[in-house]
Length: 355
Image: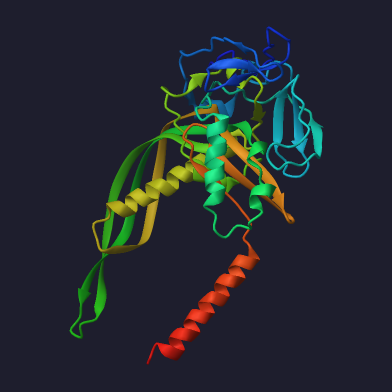
């Protein structure tokens, strides 16, 4: 298996002051965070996005496809355990995922599989902040001071590690189908009979996130990402300049297992839908996987991590589609008042409703 010779993000200096420039998705240019100088940078816009054979990859990944191959430093958050990688010029003082300052150096072993493609940010920071503000305002049960605790100016842009899996799945199934009928008493009963069949489906880019920094339920809530070959870009250091990249902690073996579980769950639903009956039971599915391939990609999110009381909360914005998902504390004052109001209504209905 041949994996492209691709490198991870490296420092791209501002031509005016020498500071590190950051890729700006709205202007499609590099903007210096220190002096504001805008400098053009021609990123790769063409190139083949390769799907790699999964079986061959699980047997052996060549050494030249491992490691970041540039000067990056990694830190592990002792609070949420996320591993973030930065260019040498970046100063990571707090975890982008939970806000903790308990960061310790993480020593790479050199066996990291490099991403070959990424999805650039299409939602810029002002737009992400607007979406976050709208989301906060729509949380009726949140405490009134939530906006002060979860400031939108702490929003961070992060590239998350993802595996995508393709497979041609053929599944045979057996079950008992049931037809409803009414007996002589007019009661509904079920007449059971054996059923069997076969379903075939090609799964394209089943997503499995390798992140440990973002809460899993939020990641799934903002999926899918547009990972078609037309939207993904071949890796180029310009896209990652000035951004934080999370190192995957779910490796290829575990990712492939989770991807297969997702496909199996989906094909089971398809088999259930294929049964021509009013209901069914004892569904047994035997899936067969062929033409299994994978990609390692980086996908963009905007996120806010904050602490309220003794608990950590996160709000996430899909950096390509703008889909928002988040967590927030509930106000016990509002809930108590709502319960009291409901009890008053019930009392009044009981007392006066019958008259």
